[in-house]
Amino acid sequence: MSGYIPSYLDKDEQCVVCGDKATGYHYRCITCEGCKGFFRRTIQKNLHPTYSCKYDGCCVIDKITRNQCQLCRFKKCISVGMAMDLVLDDSKRVAKRKLIEENRERRRKEEMIKSLQHRPEPSAEEWELIHVVTEAHRSTNAQGSHWKQKRKFLPEDIGQSPMASMPDGDKVDLEAFSEFTKIITPAITRVVDFAKKLPMFSELPCEDQIILLKGCCMEIMSLRAAVRYDPESETLTLSGEMAVKREQLKNGGLGVVSDAIFDLGKSLSAFNLDDTEVALLQAVLLMSSGAGAAAGGVSWGAGAAAPCAEPGSCAGDVGWAPRGAVMDYGGMWGGHLEEP
Image 1: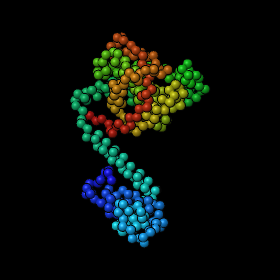
Image 2: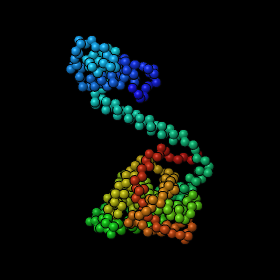
Image 3: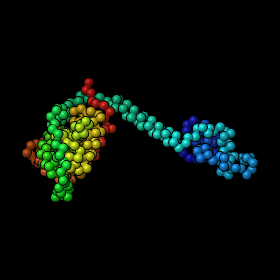
Image 4: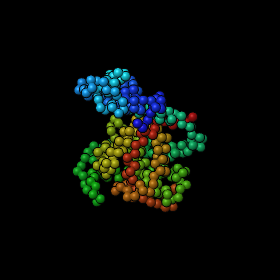
């Protein structure tokens, strides 16, 4: 039989029941896969009382005759020492498999944490870049760390009115839609300002800057909202000022994308990300976005000016790229950055 053979077995180790090639210790004996399965099924289904032998229990069991007499094969299993008490019933087998999976997942997480703990420290140049990115975020992030004190909750009746049809066929609550459109352009402008403060972005050609902004604007705004998720009130604070419920955001024009942003917020809330981590995530989103994400946009929010790093040199439309709303960054963060 081909397949994995444990290192503790000799190359030509034989099954103690039938003499076929052994694959390991099974139920306290070195056996082949066939005899292991036969013994397990016999015990689990309590089949041995039904077995009989045509030759008074005197059959010689080898890999040719093993399937000809179940009784003698089972007796051989017992005589060589296979343990009936080690055969698990269905519930115990499921529990064992679950335990194995849990242990495997625990080891995987331990290895990931270990690798994060032993990652190389950033160089002086890298720390300087981290500072630049962090300050770019802080200077363009509405209300900063005081957003909880300065936020205003959108009245609960907004977003609960009958839905109206838009020209593109979508249905929205017009009152909620109106409230959200008031903060879209400033929010987009802050994302553009963030990008302009990054040296790696400002050095790019204007056309590339516009492509990157089109591809990441929705993602960065989603991230900025998601990290301001409040589990107690179950709200997201948009643009640092407007706290909204899930249904309000959904009915106000974002539809199913709102679910993804709220789910991202709930996931990230457990990590308590600091400004540096949020800033670096935004930089990653900005520099890894592409032209394909920018095609089309979303009905509300499109059309805001996207100035290049050189003010007045050119302008474009910043579309909303819905692909960013399905991000899940929870598993990326094993701990906060700490500068020595």
